[in-house]
Amino acid sequence: MARLQCGEVSRLPRELRAQVRALPIERRRDVIRALRTGTAVNDPRDAPLVVSWARWVQTQKWPRWLLPASRPRGARAVVWLLHAAMTVAALTVAFVYFWRDGGVVRWVALVAFVDTLVTGVWIKRLVLRTRWNAPEAERKNAANVDGRSTLGDVVSPPSRS
Image (cartoon, rainbow, N blue to C red):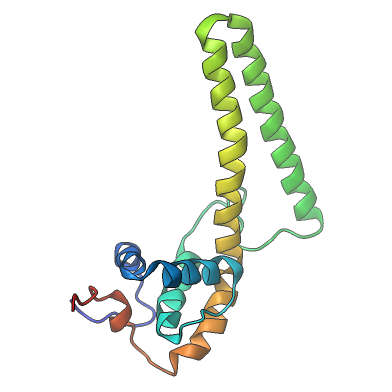
């Protein structure tokens, strides 16, 4: 496999996942925690992995209303809270509409409503934390890379010794 330069991110998602899965469970948790919280990893061998993953996260383009690149502050935070309130209101109206139909449909609607509120909020929180903290994770872990200019050891398949 060709060595990838630091700026090359086109094929990284699959290779990054393979590298993370090849790590022992404690190091895997540390890499994911470092990316989500914007901190440095405990093991410097994992720093290039966090740097390349953080760079990949930062290159992904999403609509700003769906996934903003930075944490909203001030008026943008108010707009985001209104957006969340309108989403919950729309789901509530849809739920009430399905509840009136009766029968099995109401219980399917109840399960979908609760599942959307619980898991949707949890997953969105994880995704937003990762996106917002990726630049900080890259900065803190880049210091641990020790000036290496290639990430070939990060994206090559793990050796089976």
